[in-house]
Length: 367
Image (cartoon, rainbow, N blue to C red; front, side, top):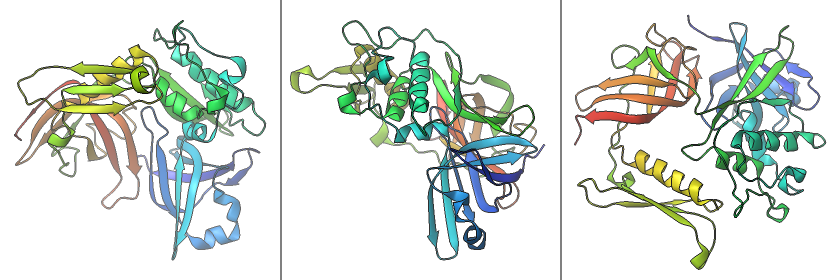
C-alpha cells in the first residue's frame, strides 16, 4: 500500500498550540536515522508564510508528517531561509534538541557521576535533566529499555564536569557510539484519541531492528537507480588507532589491527572526549571492520513494491541487498541506518535508504 503524506502539521513546542493542520510543503523529504535525529526538508509558498510568519518559527516550532492517518515523522524546525520565490525549511527530530542544551549544574544536577552504569539509564537521566529546566520540557518519553553495557569505572567515573559545560547531545552520541552500546532512534505517534503527538526515544538492546527474511532490495525489482559503489583505497584501513582523551604521555589510545595480505594502511580515529579504555578499544574495532569493507553499497533508491513495501522496514533492520549491473555484482546483508521518503518524486513515491554492511558481506565484480 502506497503511503502518501496527507498532511503537514505545525505546533508550538512550548505551549502545545497547533499552528497549522495542512502546511503546503513541496519537495518534501523526511525520514529517521539510527543513533541520530533524522531530518525533514521542504519548500513553503511565500504567500502562505506572509499571512502567518509564526507557522515555522525556527527553534520553537514542531513539525509533523501524517500519512494514512498516522504520524510518520516529527521534529523541530531549525532553519528557514528565503531565496527568490523559494522558502526552504529544514527540521530534525527530538534528539537534535540536546545539541542546544548543556549541563550547567554538573553531573546532571547530582544524578552522576556514574560507575558501571547502564548507558540506557544515563540517556534517560540526560533527558530528565534537560526537560526539568524552565521552558525546556519537550514532553519526550525515553524507553525503559535496560542493557548489560556499562560506562564508568572506579578509576574513571563517567562524569559531567560543570566547568566543561558538556553538550548533552554529544554525551548521548558518546553513549551509543561503541560497538557494544545500545541503539536509539526518534519516533512519534498519535495518542489514543489522536489529539496529541507522543514523542519518543526508542532504545534498543543489544540493537534496534532485526534480520528480515520477508523483504529484500534488488536491482530490476525495487531498486530503481544503479547505486554508486565506491572502492576507495583512501578510505581503507586494516589498522585503526583510536585517539582518546588526555595530552602528551597521558594521551589514551587503542589499536585494532589485523594482517590480511594487503599493504598496511592506517587510520586515526579521533575520540577526544573518551576516557574509558574499554570504550576506546570498542570504537577502534568497529571502525576497523567498517574500513575493511571495500566496495559496499551505502545508499539505494527504491520504489514501493511487494518485495519491500513502504513502512515495512525499521531503523536498524538487516535486509538482503542485491545490486547487479555491468560493473558490479554485490550481494550482502545490509543494515538500514536511515532513509528519506520522497512522496512527490517524479514517477511516484521513492525512498532513499542509507545502508551499512552487516557483520559479514560478499562483494565481487570490481577489483
